[in-house]
Amino acid sequence: MLIRTATPEDAPDIAEVHVRSWQGAYRDLVPGPYLAALSIPERTERWTSILSEAGPDGATFVALIDGRIVGFANVGRSRDDDAGEGTGELMSIYLLPEQVGMSLGRALLARAVDALRTSGFRAATLWVFESNARARRFYEAAGWSFDGTRTSFELGGATLSEVRYRSAL
Image: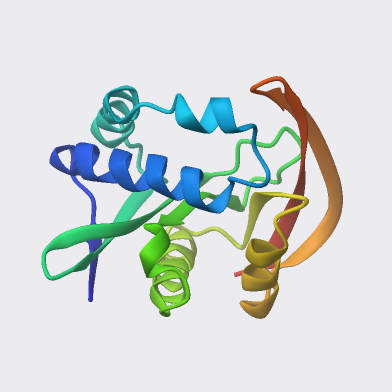
């Protein structure tokens, strides 16, 4: 396995991982029609933009096995209104469904946390679906903890709840 910084040319592969991971990991959390409608071409455009316009505090990393992108993580300055100046955010971390449980997630998370620390952040947050017990256990095992903050939003006709986790860096 290799983890490296993503480039705009990686956008199509990141988009595929993004869509397939959502469809696998969230099938019991997000309405099926929403998941079925996810578009790799639309996500490719979004990731091309993200990777082309990355600021000095942001980074995206890809995990490769045999030269194929099988996961990614994206970090940057926290987007939360109540975040302190020294707070970064793990904005996303996803793996192809067949790669879950093979230590790849831990390696990607470690690389993402290291990038936040190197950028000078002293703490980091992330948002996770409240009902995603598997992801919550993953973050808790890595030393993150629920900080008491919740939010909800509408997605595909359902109201979904997220909780915020925090970690000192």
